[in-house]
Length: 336
Image (cartoon, rainbow, N blue to C red):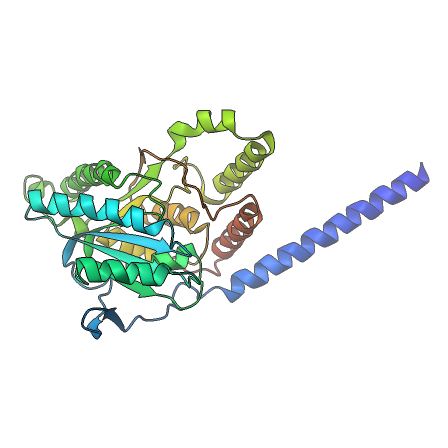
């Protein structure tokens, strides 16, 4: 009995030491990243591959020049990017031909790809002009969250949509998010200024966010996935709930739309650079009281996903950093 107690005490002591060490590492890393939201490399100019001239790079603080910006993060997407871009451009050009007030741009952020992604992206710029498609090369891989932040910070739209390079979500579904944002924005505007209820306003000036969601597909996914994958995903959802609170069932869908005012507020504050930046967006929306809409979208599995079960530990690590960073006050929120 004494031996068993000794082993139990030793095990408990070892567990406490490991936990204390992990917590210390998390606290140190959160402190080290306390200014990561402001340490963003400035993109000075963009390249026009036709004329080989540099063109001025816009910033999220500038007035909007387009109605819609689509931000596409791309890391080693040479194979999947062309089909997704062709489908996207077909939709955008068709809509622009029917509605002369509709203007758009596609911003491809090459996140340090080592294949032909950059070449493919510039081929599309040559085909559709630099006014309609732009490429921001990051040089080295910085993570999906950072790639999207760069794209958001240097876009020209009143509405800004982030979408994955694989085309898993049909681009036409952006109208679902767009319509709901307009409805909520008008309601928000009328609440704050009742006299403006029937007056036109710039959609980009009202803070609203819309999250595409695959939550309606969860029951089917649970039935087809292996038990351990379901267990890990349920565990991840629990950690997300503890870190960001309730509100959005599917935080990880890569199809999200923001008004320009919301994007400016959110992406100048975000700290996380990789997979869990989506969760931080939910957290920040709540802190800023930015309306969040969760809207079901059509989604299909596309071969070649960069997400694996090994991504789960990295996600939990980022969520731990976020929780410690904000709860201790090390990660400041800028309200300007």
